[in-house]
Image (cartoon, rainbow, N blue to C red; front, side, top):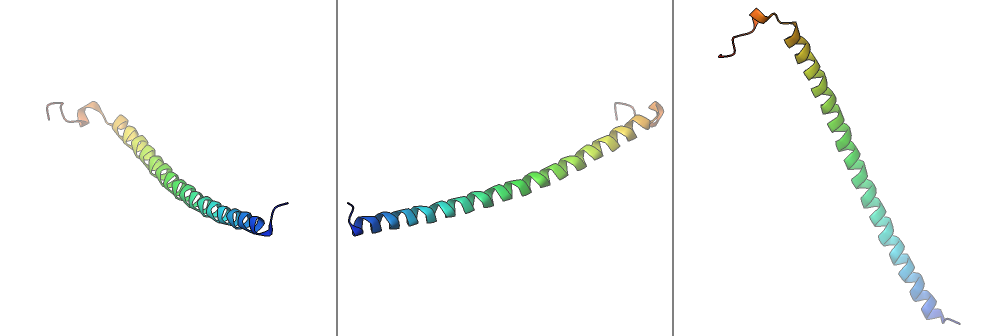
Length: 73
């Protein structure tokens, strides 16, 4: 039968491990949250770029050939 001191040491080791794991989980959670914020920001920027490209395409497509400067300009 294990002695009282052995059980106490094992309990302390488990509590220490649990505390370390809680800190690791918190760090990972914070990192994932920051990554999602970055992804959301990038998706918003990408959407704006897509909209701008569509606007530019529509604008460029509506010009008459005589409205554009010659290629040597």
